[in-house]
Image 1 (cartoon, rainbow, N blue to C red):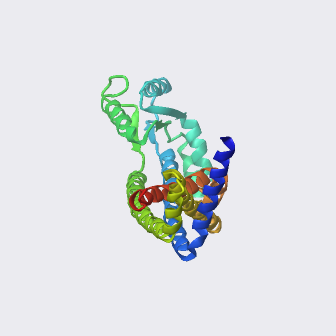
Image 2: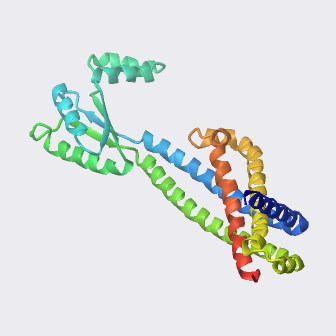
Image 3: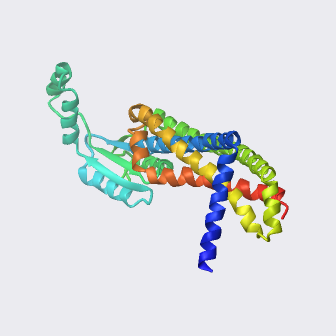
Length: 315
């Protein structure tokens, strides 16, 4: 029984290989169409990775800075920091004392002697302490800003005047860039899905007709197999093997094309998209791309052959 199974399997695979090589031009057109589909799928994946990493980088730079008056008592500032840390929206707070702010200011203007001289003439530190706040999610900054507004209006100790001088809600241009990038990411994902869907349907249609032509070409062989009692699966499976091979070859060709493309784009994406080198990412996640691209190609081939044999193979 086991020997018969392996014998039938070998015959099916051999027949599938023969169907694959028999019609060279038709096979080539199917492989090329699948390659275009799989290449587009990979481009959508790469674009999504670059945009999401860039968006994450911008999100990481977003924060709120609370500037305190020069007369603000440190214990009240620390009490406010404790209140902020208790908020569920806050991920981290960093306190920078007035002295540290002055040191940082001097370091930033170390080549500006006029500014440093004017600072020395003041005799006192004109800078107040700063509290930097990072939210757990970018959408939660509004809630934190509203909390700080209430603190600023009523005062942290209930007095009419607040220890808060101003709240620098993260730069509006920065926020606009994040919102715009989010919109671009969402739109690109939808557009990419739509393009892939159209190309996949076109690929299935071409492979469908390829299998149909192979069935027509092999009609005499199919008749003979039916006469000698061959089962449905025995007749149908070689066509599925050939179609799966279309996807396999198309997937391998796509992976081969991505190597020089990602190598050429690697430095560009690293410089302009938040440090993401697509070539390094491609090599580091090659197994993921192999499974995605080759697996998708073989799946497309299997689906198209299943539909075609079901439609045109009268068994």
